[in-house]
Image 1: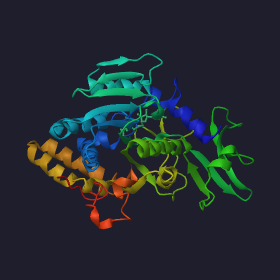
Image 2: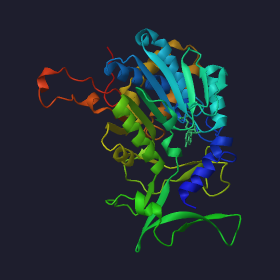
Image 3: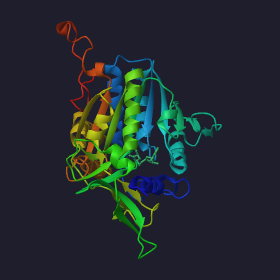
Image 4: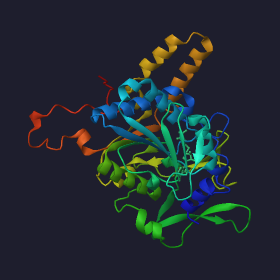
Length: 384
Ligand code: SAH
């Protein structure tokens, strides 16, 4: 089988997949993510959406669409900010749309966000479940982005694209070959990597003609989702924020597994460990097909600094009076920002309508328009 088929089965097989059965996000699980480390992370992302909503002329409604919401912590922190800034958002109709394949994680999300007040929907409705957040916002769950209704939307994908299946390719003297997963004939219980004897449909279709690397990983599913997001943003407006570890088209072999916070052999005990590959942002950018403007990738520490994390930390430190809380705040700040920890390897990438960044008729009368506000995070946050 291809590495992509193997990864898809290992992660999302309805009976035995890692996310379906285990999905161990958090300190007691297999891997920890930024929203689980500090509430400040989600709060600053919530501010990003409000700042973009304001910059885009405060449309009367928007959907917050999160892909792969994990435990629901990030949405919870964003909704708290929306609630705290209710006076700003007062006339705006907000709804939340979660794209989640794992029944187990969707249950955890429902408990976190609604306190368990959800109802399953009939088979033929696009959302498989719906409920109301603790702050009174309607929330819907879907299996895929294609089921989310059209409309002005803010998209969020945090550590989502790295979980989607990749194909792996190796350049050889005879041309590109695909890396496949095979049963070791000597040890039947063991899997091994082999090279395809000839080209495969994936080598024919997914390698860019200008590719210079000898080993490449391509995630066509991520490409298809980004294309869809770009079409939706171009047609209905909004923005997408993608945060993940990754590179800009330079890395080669990044496929790896995590179990109990330790590296795990990707081929052993499939379904019991998280499998992941770095996100290739240059590929995502290409897949927007210039339907949207893209910003980034920029490093997490730069994005969070631009969003005002230092000021937010100071306020929280001033408001906390016990040493343990203060230490926890400083520790989590260090985890998110330290270049040796998550500060440098995580990146932020945004997709925005072209008119958000360049006036449509700029060429005709450049001086007659007031300047567009800079995009927060990628520039310093200015909120009036
Ligand atoms: N965003 C969260 C969780 C990241 S883990 C955080 O940062 O903490 C990846 C998430 O994507 C999980 O919720 C997993 O169940 C979901 N997921 C994985 N593959 C998916 C797919 N093909 N479609 C929808 N969700 C998927």
